[in-house]
Length: 96
Image 1 (cartoon, rainbow, N blue to C red):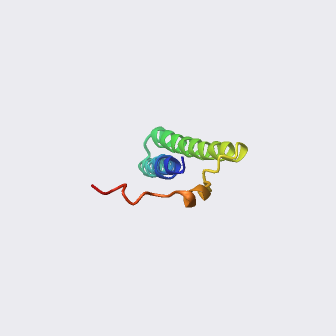
Image 2: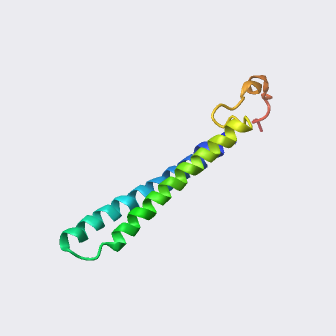
Image 3: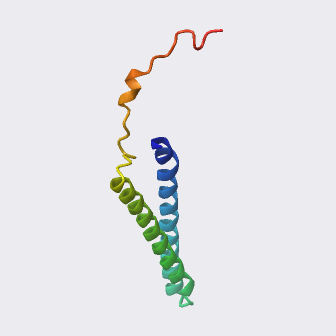
């Protein structure tokens, strides 16, 4: 389970959060550009709002996953690997 969290869930949350951040920055630049030109800046405001909403959703997802982890003691961050020391591999396992 730790590998799924480390290699799939954490990077996916980071990528989606980064998309929200870049959408916010794009909306901010668009807003300021239209403000300078004197045009309609509604679209820039919408991009900034949706960027903030996306970032808040990703922060909420991360918080909910942490809450579930801590409530049910799933230990996503510290898996129990003490049994790994008791594994014995036969020397003939990989031979022809």
